Image (cartoon, rainbow, N blue to C red; front, side):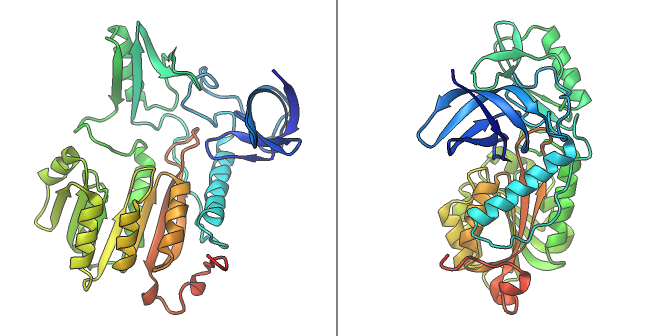
Amino acid sequence: MTQVELEIQDIAFGGKGVGRVEGKAVFIPFTIEGEQVRARLVREKKNFAEADLTDVLVASPHRVTPECPYFGRCGGCSYQHIVYAHQLEIKTRQVEAALRRLGKIQNPPMRPIIPSAKPYGYRNRITVHADEGVVGYFRRDVHRLIEVEHCPIAAREVNAALTELRSRQPRDGHFTLRAHGGPRIFAQTNDDVAAALAQLVAEMLPPRRELLLDAYCGAGFFAKRLLAHFDRIIGIEWDRFAIAAAQQDATAAETYLSGDVELHLGRLLRENESARTSVIVDPPATGLPAGTRQALLAHPPHSLVYVSCNPATLARDLDELQQAFTIISVTPLDMFPQTAEIECVAHLQNAEMIPNSPTDSGVERRSGS
């Protein structure tokens, strides 16, 4: 395999460093911008190549020793070699770049990233796999298990459950280990950042309004925390088990609907167009379906809060939503320290309700977009 020496110029989404050899981009994991490295090319395409790091010739001042003995072999973490403060800088830069490039926003209204109180030991659940006596995670780039005795990013209770699972030599399969009890439905994996997320969303929404539509609501993570803000809340979620959990302690002000989120949201926006409606959307990584974006544009609510786990699809959707909304702010949150994952919250308001929108907010679109 060909060996190359190059300088890392940036960190791409997914966590790999990017350098160039004869004009071609080369992606190398476990590197930091500014470093001089030697790497072995493992895959070459027409416009880019991938390589494995062999030596760090000039190290970044942001480089630290990983806390996990499996780091580099395990497929979970990407950033344990980077001091935590610089991880936050990288993620902020990546969100802003996506908004500029994909969202066509010249001056993204960025707010400071919200860090995790615990850079390690924060995960309240993990999923491990068992196969022929091996219990652990899949290796990086290979569908083969690596034995894991202790996961440094998992909470103490989760690691205790992992120890217990390993002691009883489980059957082959997948096992989700949790720090908390409760129904087996989606929940945020970082309790501290989840609390900060809920507070941030509450601050973005106006007080005492008539209606909140909470799309992709899960078991009511936002809805149940915002009851004091609205006369009525309607949550929408495709997962009927999550809806059943939300309904268990629902008040008279709460309604939860299971089924096609796109169809329910479109209908409710039409039926409540005259109301002072606010909307929260928290879609999967694929972002908002085209029909949902069109429904929001056809019947724009007063306020829209977009919670995203994928800055690229967030930026794509914001590009279209700017036809009817002004972007007030975008806030990254570090829900997943040591990994390349990024959570974001975008706050939008109906452009017709903001004088001289959008330039008063400092957000400018590129000409021709």
